[in-house]
Length: 250
Image (cartoon, rainbow, N blue to C red):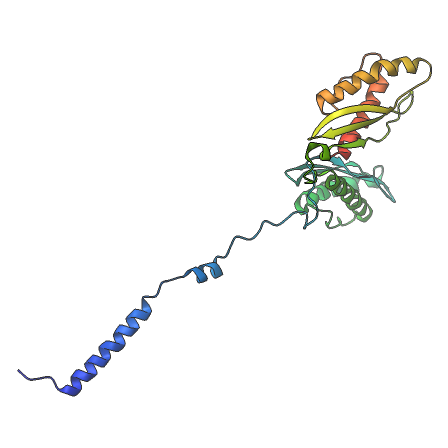
């Protein structure tokens, strides 16, 4: 048997060493904690629909009516879970050409408000004034909804109690205006700060208003029955009560 040449053995040993080093390098982990974090990373924080502003309170809220060249525009929002779930125009320009413009623009603006979750929406082509009024009233509604959001003051239920006065509702016998106290998301007190008075109205008011106040607290909404013999006062009371609830964020 022929003996291996010393030089050949040295070459083979060197080649084996190089191959082993290459093999070890190729067996490094496919990933490590650092690379996994760099690639996957932590999930991005959920984007706030309010853009960092104070959250909006749940419920139904109506913005102030915005005056335009062709009529008033007023927007009502429904908010759930801090998000706008529904937007609608309770007032919009009407009559003549305005009917067509309104029927075309308002649904688009409603949809845009829900999608954008803000008043930063595009105007509808051909409805510049209506769009501007819509955005103005929408912003007003958002401001009211933010103002109604419970603040984390650490003061308990007493710190969250607030008093809201609805808009005065005009009736055939005089205005009716309701003030409510809300605590923990419930009406704890209702009172009429204005009601028809003088003559027969005094008796009607003294009989109807206490019943309406009690009904408002029990129902927690403006969906209450009219008091017999006080149809106009009851209707005005419910209208002003709904306005107060809107201001309170539902």
